[in-house]
Image 1 (tube, rainbow, N blue to C red):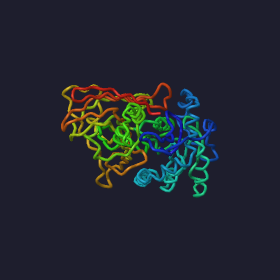
Image 2 (image 1 turned 90 degrees about the vertical axis):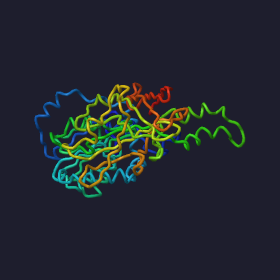
Image 3 (image 1 turned 135 degrees about the horizontal axis):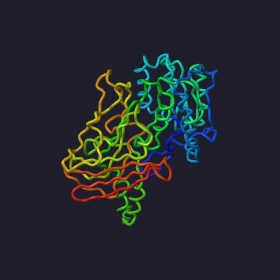
Image 4 (image 1 turned 180 degrees about the vertical axis):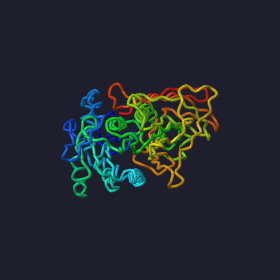
Length: 422
């Protein structure tokens, strides 16, 4: 995620326990981030349309809470932005997407939602954008302005320090670009801010990059991880410390773990949990996502948990879907429903839409995969069915947190795992 803007976002906190990476995205900008910034007429010509009157009739934006302030402070830390920029899979995918759509961007107006250091804004300016509004509620916006100035782009890239809900842009835009994805796609994500920017400023027929996203789920086996964290306690320098096992399991597996696995850890084809069309999705759809799944194991192995990953697609408005409607997740599968058999989309030639994937079989990214480990593994045979349901919902305690309710059954045994992504 490039920077901070406002709606439904959660800080990628520095994490050291379990499988979460240490030294990852920290905290962003201060209370000034909640002030309103209006791009002045001297910075760009005023272009008002009928939608401006409609905008005045809309309800005021949500107040900036203490949770928001803490979140914005998180992304003022340079280490977070260094990590993201050094993720070459991520950064080069965005650069390639901008160049792939250069003919649409050239001579047009762009808004970069959560601009961070301004790198995506600069990519758009280099592609010939007429004007780029770089919006970020974090104090990193101060450095972004200096970066823009150092690259002689101050006349093209206008940095707005504030929330998408608060800043004013007195013209409609042709393109929205944003790196909004969080762990499990929706945790700590800025998608709500992209929706707000779309509804406030995007012209009819405009371009959103990325235009779509798909979240996947699959059962996994990971004996090395289980042995390192749990079985280790059975024999410590010849001492039986198995009494530590309950505490060890709770400590290691209570919360979601952000780790890198490989395709060899995945037991089945993935299931589509949620498909997001950035042109049509609404804010209320982010409150809760539910789906039922039915897998058939491709091997005999212990089931240690489930993995989430996602991909995003960079294509135009006329081609904004990664998957077909027949592949969309359904609520309430019957006993006759087929098992999941949806391989990840691969880009086989340059004319196909560009896809940024965080799948286990693809080059690793800073997002890695999000793993929900079971406290006790289940032995499954080849072709054995694993089925159940999963619900991802915003926490009532803090909408920036994500509750994960996982129900699973296999071999006649049923279980429920509750996790909170903080």
